[in-house]
Length: 126
Image (tube, rainbow, N blue to C red; front, side):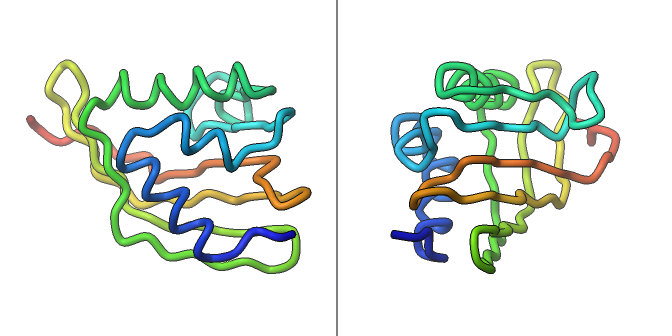
């Protein structure tokens, strides 16, 4: 069993629905999420289903209206890429609109690693 482009589309759709249950069904039990921002060279690294679930939910707490549009996906073997444009409004009213991508590593038909990157752009006025 392997991940398909249709699976990556469904994963992206779950992000736009803010559906953490659907997202976690795509992830391995020992999954890793490397967020685009944070104090480490990799951003912020979350390991294991409990930590990854919390990190995913934190995205929607920070940006309650978060959306990923213009998604494009491709897969090569056990790796995949999703490119997108992220938009969201922070609690202080600052609006973010940036291009980004996720680099995936797959294992046993699930996502083992989601490594997220996005452009660093100052917030737009609310």
